[in-house]
Image (tube, rainbow, N blue to C red; front, side):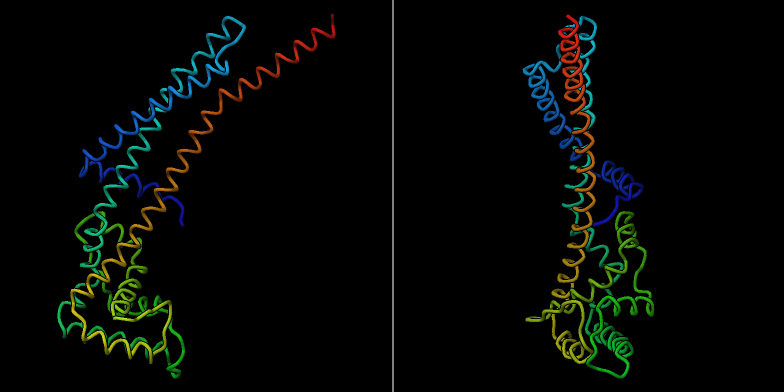
Length: 276
């Protein structure tokens, strides 16, 4: 979905470690144990296929260093993966609370009572009308409505929570769009996609006034939560995939070196046979 923002990732990791140390310890311990088990299996496989055995005395000693090296590499990588799993699970668990805080900083006042909803709908209808210009049947993108509303009213307040503020700042435009999506899709039997005409919007807004503010709030928060989880999962998968690729390449080194050794030995034997 996107490139890794390492500065943000490390800041979030430190934030989670500070606030959820036991969850980090739990996942780090689980993956550390798993790392030891994987190390033992890999070493047994190397021994079975004589990857860490050589005919030459000192060379044989040297390749035995693969054993502690594999343990050290797996410990480091296990702790890294355990750390990121802990961060992922902590943020996943708090995703609804984080989304509520984002909602509180950007949209809560809109639905707090009937008058605020009337005022909000009135403002948005004016914006939709301006975007539609003279053609009331033209399809208007939801994201364009959200951007225009944000530009006109500057709807986002600075959240107090650092992590919430980070998310709100980075994905502000999409959050505003999701507020509109969540609001419109909370209407029974409404299926708002990416665009709608002024007439369609006008029909939907009439029904909005009849909805319970709590239902509106829940719909919007869930939309924001879905965005948060999508971003979180995308970043997490990219990081873990990168770690596993590097780990896999490191674990291939003994096999590559063993293959080169076997090739060289065969060449030597062949040359020796020819010379004789």
